Image 1 (cartoon, rainbow, N blue to C red):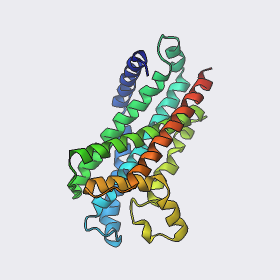
Image 2: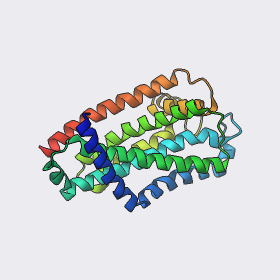
Image 3: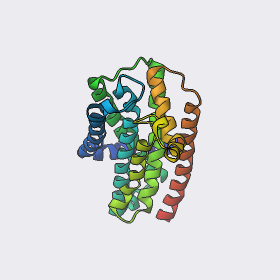
Image 4: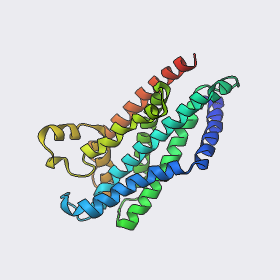
Length: 253
């Protein structure tokens, strides 16, 4: 992005953040559901789930964070769809601004709002007994992985918003994404799953991301999981970004 485009994206980010601050219920909604899942699994199901660790909230937290992000990006798609339908994009395009900056404003807002949700969930997890021996670098690595994951999903959300016909359709793409952690190593070890389910769980992106974050929290070797997780996040991000820009050009043509 050029300096001009970065400046335009910053302006669009401020505009989009103002909309979010006026409807904090979206962040609250995105945060409450993962916290409810965390409470349910730790205090209701936790005693019956064998994970090889005495602290189930430590095992569970990475998957909960991914569910929160999957829920949060749905609101990005919803907000972008509403902007498209309101006609505000036509007004923006009549101004001397970089056109992709309109999309980047929504994308960066997604990163900020999801970071707030993740921070709140981590605080609740600490109250519930989550503990990590990770140092500063490990925490920064976790943050970087979550930002990459957020960016990848948000650009998918942009595609959904540009392609949808209704508000519900704009957000519906997130349902399979929210479901993926349930068929991964997020809640139980994949060793306990039946053959076909285990094969899917071990070869879908959420498992490698969850395993990487869990290892970083525990200061354990991340093995090849980190490269698999990075490949998934970066690959999906690049493909979604290219497709989203192409869909955007068609939409405004």
